Structures are given as C-alpha cells and as structure tokens.
Image (cartoon, rainbow, N blue to C red; front, side, top):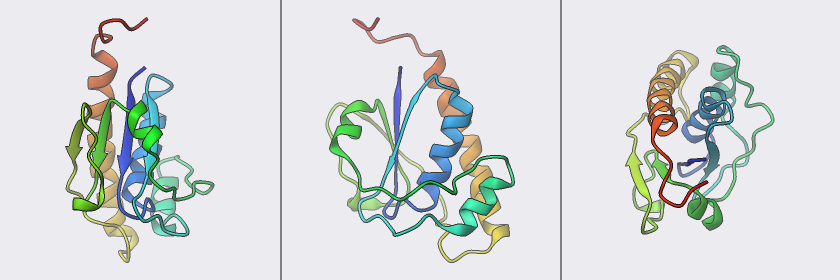
Length: 138
C-alpha cells in the first residue's frame, strides 16, 4: 500500500487538513502520515472548524514531530511551505504544495485553502491508487 507523508512546520493546519482528506478519500488504500519540524501545541481551531463543515473530524488530532520512520515508510512526501525546515531523504518522491498558511486567517480564507487541499489530495490519491505495485510487492 502506498504511503503519503504530509509535512509543514507546525503540523497544525495544512498538513492536518491534507491528512484528513487523504484518510477519507483513500479509504484504506493508502497509508497516511503527518508531521512537522516544529509542531505547535494544538491544531488550528479554524482548520478544525472548516474540516468539520465537510464532515471530517480533526478535533482529536494533535501536531506531531516529524518521524524519520514515517519518512522511510512513505512513498510520497508532500511539503507545504516549510522550505528548508523539512528534511529531504533520498529515494522518496517529493512534492512541494505551495499553499497559504491558515494560521491567523479567518474561516472564509481557510475554506479556500481547505478546498484547494481537497482537490490536490484527491488527485494524488487517485494517482497512487491506480499505480501498479512496485516490483517485488505482494
């Protein structure tokens, strides 16, 4: 099963929303990981509210420190505005999604970010779910 790691500095907004969509859209067809290089104390409450509007509950999610094991388990690493703060590991596919940071923004702005993330995650999960298994996979 392909693995996706969503990274941003604080793991409190973009990466949490992306992981939520990936869990929903992937429906068990992909492994989902999320982390940050400098995790915040809590997930952005405006992001939690915006996701609740589309039926995805992030209320129990907590920002987490990037785990090297999760990077190793992932096939695709999505960075979201963390620049040099997100480490690069050889042999992984890296995509940098340039998305506005929901921190300090109101619900209207966060809804736009949420919807952009939903489209990007949907396309990525569809691509990974349709890809043939790697050689030697069972």
